[in-house]
Image (cartoon, helix red, strand yellow):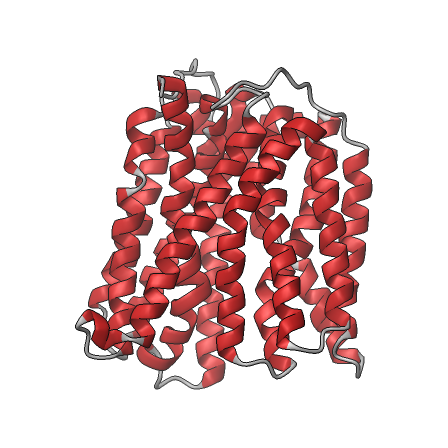
Length: 415
């Protein structure tokens, strides 16, 4: 393996590292453990309120800082430095949850907020480093490899953590609560450990320090985005369809609960998506190199549209697993190809700031979708109907994507 190949794999392994936080902490144990262990004395409404405040606070901080720090990282060549600081903040905060005592919900929530800031901010700098490890002809496969390894790594650790929770005595643990605390410590160590190859093997090109303050550069880049029609159209398309994608991800379990499906079946479906997502995301990158990135994004949008319609007719846990498998086949693909497609549209020397805007939109994702679904659910008696309100998001997003000028491609080289 030569230095270029080693850099690509090392970059992709960061997805393996930080996805453990997304699966075990954000989507898995923290919301449940916060309610039953740290904040059990709070009223249910208060628990939901404070958990929502923490999640929103992390998103707002990253939305404000990502474009500004991205511009500074571009001018100073600080992407890796900022990524290291974000990783250290996220991993240390997550590991520290191991020592938070029962009932101490304020400390637990503070650590969760800091961990989320580290995760979201780190993702922005990580995404922008793709231009340092892959040329335009290699971005689809490299981006897909990252998402694929993320699904596999996050899924493996989450599966182990779930088994620890269900069978704590097998691991010499007293009970499920102790297993969850150990899981948080394991995520912190896993995140930091598997990030090290990136910091060792990915080399960031030094940039010329431009004149002007950080805020002046931010305003300048924003004006530049407004004049770049392909970038502007793509960001509009991405915001719409990724909003619907994230809404489905976040509301799938709640939808299954409303239909009376067993919690075990729902967790099993989530794990299945993780393990299908690994080969599917890698295959998606390979297919995009042969059939075109935009065509493969369209295929994912069609599958999501079919899943949305199929959800209306959902009747059994078997149907839920079928739809979950379909999502697993395209979820990593639409995320990875959106990243690589965008990376080919923007100036490589400004990738930090441009990906700051990209991830800022990502933080806004799943804002409008849940509002539309929730409002519809409140005014109609048929609780299956609201899911269909997501179809226009996919349709309008696809329409805007069709207006984006296809970025130039070159001949593919092997990793």
